[in-house]
Image (tube, rainbow, N blue to C red; front, side):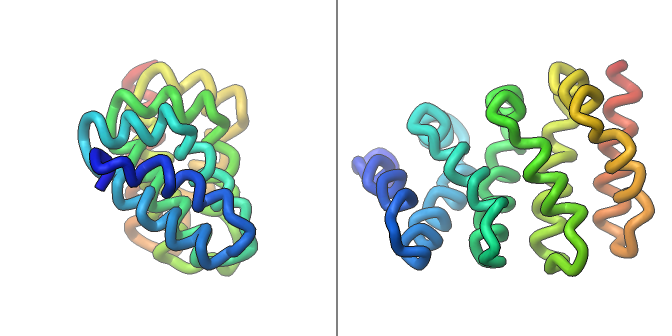
Length: 162
């Protein structure tokens, strides 16, 4: 799909005035973000990561889900971690992760994305400067086992690479 020149129209569709079109184009991007190599690189180059980050700030839960899933897929790939942090990914991810009443699936995607970002030593300064450590400690006491585990793992990775 990405090699067939569908990526540029998908990125354009994310900018549509229709929330439904944005969501479905975002879902395509989020799934393509899981691809290793040229596909995910092309998404970053086209600014797709910033569009997915903007989904995290939507009041639409489905948009938040798509955004956290797509950013999480990109964050799973080491070479995309610094570009995500430099695109200001930490605050919107943490906001979603800590939002009261957020769906558990969305919270887990956001926390997993933060965890993946925390495995990169170069991102630690950003976590500290943006006040993320106390928030990770708070999430390490969350009700959900996976949220606690991912948050604690983030803290461990940062202490190991300090």
